[in-house]
Amino acid sequence: MNKPEVLYMVVPCYNEEEVLHETARQLKEKYTALIQQNLISAKSRVVFVNDGSKDKTWSIICELHGENPEFFSGINLAHNSGHQNAVLAGLMTVKDICDMAITMDADLQDDINTIDAMVKKYYEGNQVVYGVRSARKTDTFFKKFTAESFYKFMQVMGADVVYNHADFRLMSRRVLQELAGFKEVHLFLRGMIPLIGFQSCNVYYERHERFAGESKYPLKKMLSFAINGITSFSTKPLKMITSLGFAMSVVSILAFLWGLIIKIADLSISGWSSTICSIWLIGGLQLLCLGVIGEYVGKIYAEVKQRPRFIVAEFINDSENQ
Ligand code: UDP
Ligand code: MG
Image (cartoon, rainbow, N blue to C red; front, side, top):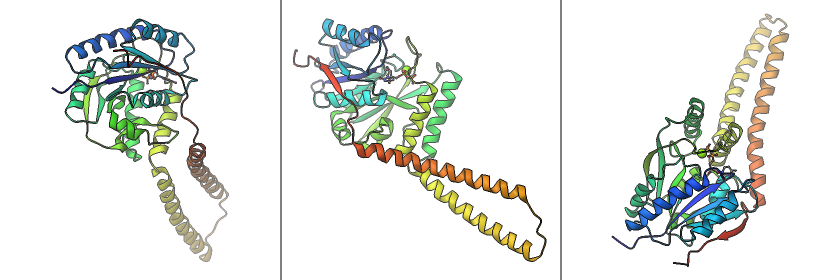
């Protein structure tokens, strides 16, 4: 086999003090095995990205780096930027020092043993390897239902996402370089990566329960993530408004003709309630349509500002020290 290549794991962490030690222990074990099998280079690292945590997360990361600089690195973001931005911050920081990068949650829900398969697929020539959940046995009914509806709805709305794939994936250095060219502020990585293209494949894994602590993705955040995904990747809602408007126009012309015929035939009766109802209906529809347009206008507003998407306060890494 060729020379083993450098793998960087990017692990976003927000208030993860309860799980970090265990995650680090398991990752260290995995890295040791992979290095021994000559699958990855000894220059490979795990980079924990501290996303403005309020607990001891950053001091634990510094401690891990101090004890094992040959395994662990850390990025401290200046403030909480959200999961997607934290992942991007990590990827953009390591894109020039790694051959491949894997993004993984800190809570051990993604199966660490899938890393082997991902790396092997990379050597087979895949530039992107998507980790896809094979089962959702450990999710509550509510989480399973909302998550699966989310993927189905995304597909119906025209956003091209890999079904049941979250953000557990391997990307090659080449893909990361291309990702750097995507300047959007509203990140939805699982929609952006398929847009980059290149040879890709899926590996399947069972998602575990969170090792400790609580989900940092409550329903409210999940909903806004779904809306963000659709409005960032599809103009289908706008097209649906046009179709709706068209259908409404046809109906109103027919209604107008009907009204005229009744009037001419002198059959008209005063219909206060039907008038009021239609006014409310049309008013409601108009507001709905304006709302959808507003969503897009709001996005344009945020995009044109071109604010930095994250600010790296510190990067502790020992990549040369091998
Ligand atoms: N996370 C983050 N910033 C945030 C929220 C979450 O970096 O603002 C991280 C979190 O530490 C975890 C990952 O993103 O590693 C996924 O979050 P979580 O496990 O809470 O989401 P769930 O798996 O419940 O959807
Ligand atoms: Mg989780």
